[in-house]
Amino acid sequence: MNWLQATHFFRPRLLDSLEGYNSQRLVQDIGAGFTVGVVALPLAMAFAIASGLKPEAGLFTAIIAGFLISALGGSRVQIGGPAGAFIVIVYGIVDRYGLANLILATAMSGVLLFLMGLFRLGNLIRFIPVAVVIGFTNGIAVLIMLSQIKDLLGLKVTTMPADFFGIVNTLWHNLQSTNLAALLLALASLSLLIGWLRMSRRLAETRYNWVSMIPGSIIALVFATLATWMLSLPVETIGSKFGGIPAAMPSFQWPDFSWNSARFLLMPTLTLALLGAIESLLCARIADGMIGDRHNPNQELMAQGVANFVTPFFGGMPATGTIARTVTNIKSGGSSPISGMVHALTLLAVVLVAAPWAGHIPLACLAAILMFVAWNMGEWLEFWQLRQYRMPYRVTLLAVFFLTVVFDLTVAVEVGLIAACLTFIYRISSLSRSEPVSQLDHPGLAEFAHQVQAWRLYGALFFGAVKLIEEIEDNIKTPVLVLDLKNVIYIDSSGADALMNLIETCRKKTTHLIVCGLSHQPLDIARRSGLLEHLDGHLQPDLAAGLARAVSWSPGQAR
Image 1 (cartoon, rainbow, N blue to C red):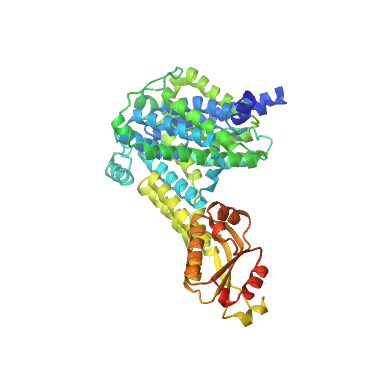
Image 2 (image 1 turned 60 degrees about the horizontal axis):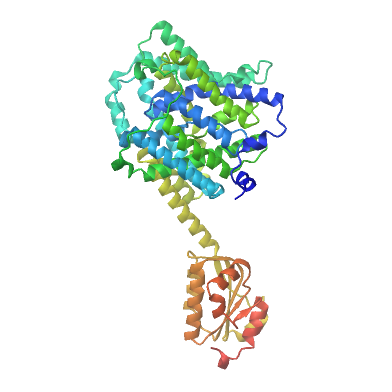
């Protein structure tokens, strides 16, 4: 592979975005990157804490993964970093297997993501049904909100279990330890977030629209931190819980892996990779619609793979494309991957300069921010609209939702995909049908009704629809059988095998079989499977020719 072929195969969008780049766009990208960095600051810490990690894990992820995803990705404006969707999975991995194996699972998911992009599987992610995506998105949102109740109420709980029933049981038995100051601070932060969202929408239509660009999470974070510090509120902070945030660059660390537990990481790794691919490509598609562009899904997956392989060895957590930060980037004027790289550098500057102040940030405020994010993350209206859809859609969505909440996201995705596949097979098989050729359309058949049977097949002749051939095979009553496959658009190996069985049955019954209208993919599979050789002398180009051949065939000649 020469250099030009290699750059075409792995070509970050950054290279194309720099064509015609000027100082005006640079200023816009720097401004957008700074704004997104400010938005990402509280979210990165909150996602890490909710995942059972230290707050710096989220910041290091936003810095390293955010920079790599923008620099190497296939989208002009996508912002990468830690995401709420990973909270449940990461918390479960840390709880069951430990931090060292989280690093291993994240790195392995990075390898899988890169291979998915390398083998051009980016477009296949779009085939995951909407019901599955909505089901586990809403389920994750519920689990995120449930996991934040501890810090929202200021409960004195040392460790929280990872499973649904364990969380509910722990919360219930520790409600008496509710910290009123933490609860009031969280409610005030939540009220400020909701109020600022409504106010910013009104300000966006006035001459003070620049004020609306200030993220509500930052305003809530500043006010809550100042209130905690000035009033000496008895609430848990980042400093009291984690000892603050180190004001240093993330350093390489090689963890002490436990291979005994690592062998159980296959399904969590697959879940991380699949969820990361879905989130990033859905986010990129939303961004495309906002800027009138089209991303490269395979390049995006390779960039996500590199980021997830590198980041965990520098104290980070899984990363993907993030919708809230990407939308903020677009609305702030970001037009190239430069803005995403500036966002990462902004966070790095904050870590190096403002880390000592972060120790005063109350966990109750971060819990309120995550509650707000989780609520906006869920598509709750879909539950109300379920009655508009068919039963398979409802069952799939609700099954994935409840399995995500009550059991495990991995199980939910597996069951959801299996249910969606079975539903799809049923639907396609129901669209495939057979019907006898009408004597009204072909009056000449009337006088040969006892000698010729003619059938038309429609749709796809695959493993879910071979019963159509079997029904015809069981009801052969004439010396000649005509099969019109003109309207069959697809035949798989099972369909070809069913046709082979029909040929054999016709030979045993001394029935002459005539097949009409084979073309395109059905003709190709007939040729490759050897079916065409068995049909030699039995093929006709269309139904008219097949019927003409059938009525000219005397019963004595049938074979």
